[in-house]
Image 1: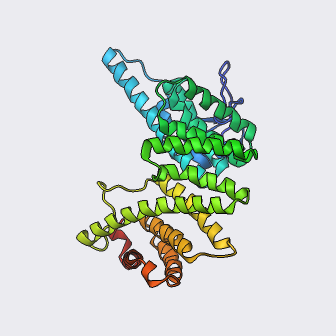
Image 2: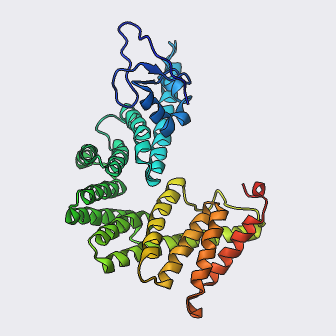
Length: 367
């Protein structure tokens, strides 16, 4: 972590804390362009995002030297803009990843950086700010800070309402967050209304059976589960599992075919469709929750248990965590043995064989 360095502020210069905008008295010794009000905020920022962007902040926050020609000045400004856009992408992706992992406190600093650079690049009224407003809102919902979450969602809502260029995917995410907020407040009917809108807008973009739509179904299922409407909840959990199962089995089949052509240690292809880091994190969050619900049920249903186990095994296989894939694969085999012969899938056998092949291959041959 960056070292603490109490500042003696130059006369007339007001330094602000990176996280709370209070007067700052501590400087990061790594970049020397970031300041904090106390050690606690410095540590929070370092743990969340600063370690990853410390050196990237130097060229962004260091004054640009005077340049004689207009061409040099234009080139310098374009470089600065691209650096800021890169920081927006990096910080927002990290904030989203932390959000999927349930590390809500760590989300705030990363998302705060993203919001600050987004305002700087796009202005206060741009739709480009909405995704980070939604990340901050969801993190605050997770922390139980509902008033703060409402404030961010209000900014997002009015920005979308006034925008003429807002895409349906952003509208989907806005309604999902509003659904989560009302769910946290116990207002289930209003929550379900917004989550239905989430599914509607997501379906317009990718279709009702796409993984981007599954999150809305999952959160609706959680509400019915909380209301003890188990039949509806169970149906929606099955729908979510089916969506992810169909998506992952297609990706696994492609990977196995490529691996068979290229050798047992070969894995992945830049030209092939794959899950990005945030999709993996979302899938793990959703599918693990469904598995826990299925596992804790008084009456376990082998077909449903087998499908969620198969889906999780494929997820770990695609994320290259072959030890985890093997662990879940063993549970899958035990559950599949309880199914009638006609319901047992050859794809499970092929998957398990490929997992074991990966485990027996030297790591450096597939990295």
